[in-house]
Image (cartoon, rainbow, N blue to C red; front, side, top):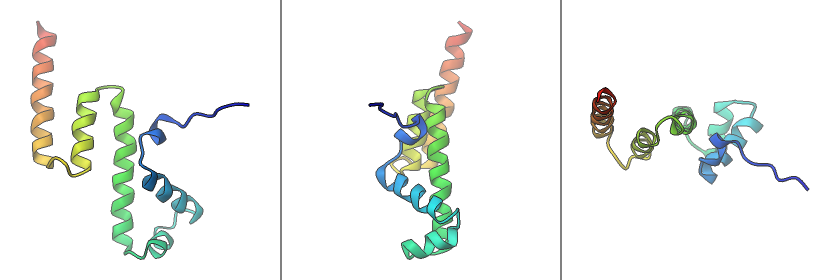
Length: 102
């Protein structure tokens, strides 16, 4: 009996995100069809897809720098405003650069 592991990018997603991906695939990538299934507008589905793409990209960035990935995740989940996230990341990068120079 073999145990299949989820890809890292998929393991970091919430159940509702995985359900959205499944509906999207079964709809052959038709955003209009997915919008109809959810009873929302096309732009709403497009926005959700864009956020999902950002989440997947962020998971890929996590290995490179977990701190920056955490800040991005908080901003994407609207637990931190975007301007504050940018400031935190910029300051972190400055601090890291100074340490590397020493």
